[in-house]
Each structure stands twice: as C-alpha cells, then as structure tokens.
Length: 300
Image (cartoon, rainbow, N blue to C red; front, side, top):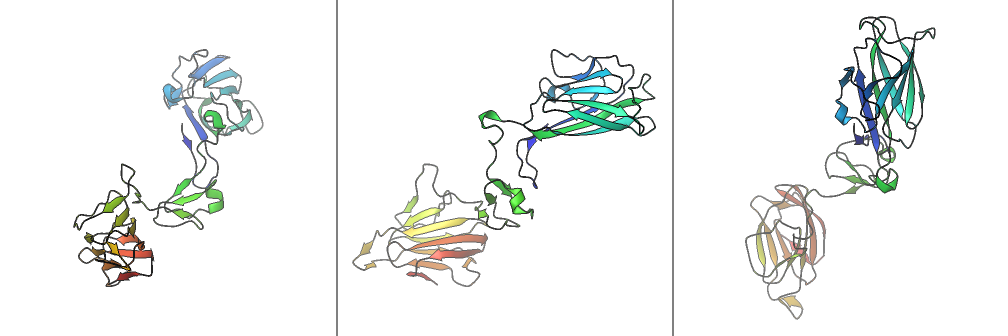
C-alpha cells in the first residue's frame, strides 16, 4: 500500500491495496477469507500476500455465496477506485464482473456464457483464488486530499508539463528541464546556520562554503575560490574601506588553480565601486559562469 503520484499524472494521494489469495478448498457462505477488521475475523490461510498487518484497518473480503465476494476497502476513496482482478483457475477462462462503490465492491466470477464459477472444493478444480489491485484517491488530513499537491520534482523526465505538475514546476537543476519551470540550485545556501550573511572584513585564504551570499570590503583579497557544480554564489561589496570616489584598496577574489570564468582565461574578480555585485554559477569544479555583474567590476 502506498500514497504516490505517478510521473504522468496530476493526481496525488493515490492509495493502492494489493491482495493475492490462493488455495481455496471448501468455503462456506459468509466466510471471511481475508480480514484486518476485528469484527470480521479470518482464521484461514488463503492470503498469500501481503501480510495482514499492512492492510488498511477494517479491510476484509467475505465469500458471500455462489460466485460472489464482498470487498470492504477499509479506506473511503474520494472517487470510486479502479479495481483489477486476475482470477486463479484450473482450466477454462474466468470472467469477472465488479459492482463497486466508494467503500465496497462485489466481485462475481463467471464463465464466458455467464455461468457462475464457484470456489474450489478440493484445491484442484474450480476457482482457486484471485489477485486484486485497488487504486484510487483518498482524503489526507483536513485538506480533503490536497495536502501534498504543489511543487513536484522532476530530474530527467520529458513528460508533458501540463499533465505532470499541479501548480509549479520545479527542477533540481540537472538533466532535462521542463519549459517555464523554476530551476533551483542543488547547492544554494543563502544564509548560514545562524541566519546571517557571511561578511569578510580581513584578507583571508579561507573561503566559507556554509552559505552562498558573501559581503566583502575594500581591504579583502580572497583567494582560492573553487566552484561546486550547481552552486550559485552572490557576492557584493559593502563600501567599507571606501574613501571619496574610490576604494583605497579594491577588494578582489582570485579563483583557485586552473579555475576560470566563462570557460575562458579570466580568474580574478575586482570590485571598484561600493555596491558592486556579481552572481556566479558553478558548471563544474573548474569553471564559473557569470550570471550577472555590475559594469564597474573588472574581470582579468
């Protein structure tokens, strides 16, 4: 049993029940053959999978009479569910007829001419059992089945986007990208664990990757900036160390060895005006793409 959302469906909260029953011998009218309901106790061994404890509470299957079995889902579906039955029979083909509601179903087994197919009395001849799969939408919490609708994640599917997502398309930034979707970096940490932006106030060779929004001032010379694939870094100059119309010492960032900008040869970023800012995206461990920068930033 599970709650899931198929990749090609806008439905969520789909609940499945699967049952495999075998080894019918002598069934009596109104006998409970599968049950997870204390009021409908079953003591037989017809259930082959799954185990009783994973069935929905109050689920049971009762042999009513002749070729008729009653199924109580134990779940109230918001719409009448789909039911697939595979009969287990000794020889001739078996046809099934289903009369179902939101909470129960009656299963009828017949031959091609409509003659009732009854359960086996010897474990060899007649209807020996059946497999049944029930799937449909159910309610979750107080939101009547809509609580897990919203952003769906796609990482490599080319499914048609209007069928795939309910509200907003969100990709993980890899493989195929759905049209008009929002791509979120896998390594995007705007703030540190304390909710603060990292502010560099002195020259250092140690770069802090616990977040990706950095502030630097005029006395800072950062070195050895190494990209991580999927990382987005926001860097801005604070105006500290700024005197008159220019910095007394322009803040700079030098990339690591054999690391370059825009697949070229530039590997240094120089900030010349307070408020300068640049956004970098790591495409690999050796390259940053400059997504955006102010015109007064020099790349060399």
